Amino acid sequence: MADSAASFDLGAPPAGYAVRLRGVTKAYPNGTTALGPFDLDVRSGEFVSLLGPSGCGKSTALRLIAGLSAPSSGGVLVSSQAPRRRGEHSIGFVFQEPTLMPWTSVRGNVSLPLRLARASRADTEARVSEALAGVDLLDFADAFPRELSGGMRMRVSLARALVTEPDILLMDEPFAALDEITRFRLNDDLLALWRKLRKTIIFVTHSVFESVYLSQRVIVMTPRPGRTGAEFRIEALEPRGADFRTSADYAAQCREVSLALARTSEPVRA
Amino acid sequence: MSGLNAPRLPSDETGARGGARLLRLLLPIVVLAAGVTVWDLAVRLNQIPPYVLPGPGLVLRTLIADWPVLSASLVTTLWTTLEGFLAAALGGIALALLFNQSKWLEYSLFPYAVVLQVTPVIAVAPLLLIYLPQETAVIVCAWIVAFFPVLANTTLGLNSVDRNLAGLFQLYGASPMQTLVRLKLPAALPYILGGLRIAGGLSLIGAVVAEIAAGSAGAGSGLAYRIAESSYRLNIPRMFAALLLLSAAGIVIYVLLALASHLLLRRWHESALGKDN
Image 1: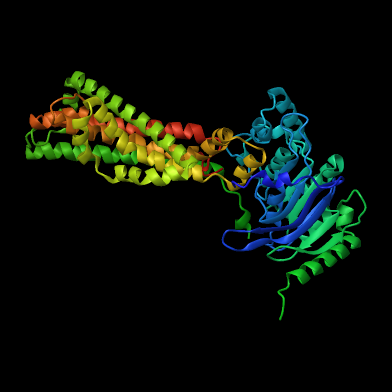
Image 2 (image 1 turned 90 degrees about the vertical axis):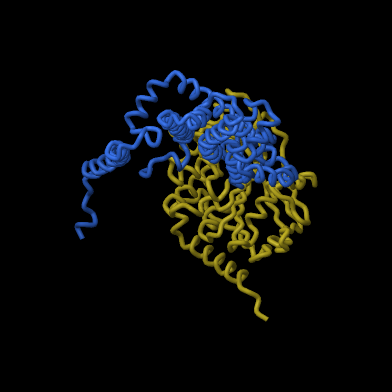
């Protein structure tokens, strides 16, 4: 992880765009190429899903955008605004696991990004309470992570990502480990948050249904090394809800995306 | 099918568990009582002289009669142990932190930490007594024996930080100091405490070994020295009394460290949680 935020030095994407990737590849020291060449344009405020089989490099793409690792070649452009106050950060990251610190309370976990930026105590407290209220966990502020259910832990993780008021939210299969009922509810919560805050969200998933339900655009990726296999614009009525999930329109879009996924995942026959 | 959903009676279960807990407490006490009785009977029936094997009653009487001498020695040994333990704890943790910062330092020094660990301290102690003042030599012995488990465990703990959490700290631009204090040390705490628990008992062993080595050189006043001295004078009851105190000291050290570990981890770490949670 020594190769830190070097990718940010390449400049910013054009106005109206939050993220632009051009010809990005990522090869690991053992010789495998995980990603690319991969191109991606994400508009500010857009909700985009990266959909693909395990190991297609979609998580790698997120880590590159976050600056957690550097691309082997190509350019990663991420719009970043100068923080207006301490503890603001242009990117929020939600991992597949809640990735909470077990030794501190919910409040301690959510306040982490602000404490690292040395925000003032009063400011920290107010913003943490606001973030916790946003995910409906204010009553559990003093609980420890192990005392919470899987869904609640994920909401803590989401609150921690939102507390820095990021412009871009990167989510790496955040609900994959949850049961279906909890996942549906968190999907709706996420959509409500997105409608309210209009952040740019890049959402990595291996679920066709989740990607179609949530996003404005679904990018189907090929198996390793990951490239864009197909792209779908999901035009659906807003706000989406239980009606959309049971509509024929939804089923049709899911079928189309599924077929594309099957097609791009097929091994090439000689 | 009714059996599947039949509610269990909670009172029965807690009752059975309470009984099991009582049994766990009682069994070692019964074994102790039986051991002491057999010891006492063996001494009485065979009329074994006290300079070969004193009975438990005589050991207890010696302990009370020699208490002024023995308690002073106990304090000496406990101080040595404590100083050795603190040196081992600080040294082990500090060395692990250094190793964690620099791979080169780790590659250069770790083999010698292993050498120190595997060389029997009883063979090193006489040499240390030649080159160092006696009090220092005894503490160094305690340190040599006790620091390695702290070093090894802390290193393991620092290396087992969640990769994604580390990524998160990197994303938010945490300084190396913040990462150390807020991430690495808390994540390593259960491992460090495990190492300290082993080090507590080992520093007592190190202190005793050094005292015995020093005792034959003619100076010193710790419990181990008393044991050596009593052995020369064939004062076997006092040997037993001193041994009893050493063993009690070891138990107290272990219990204190286990308690500290439990108190520090009880709210979050699996090891400190009951099976029901």
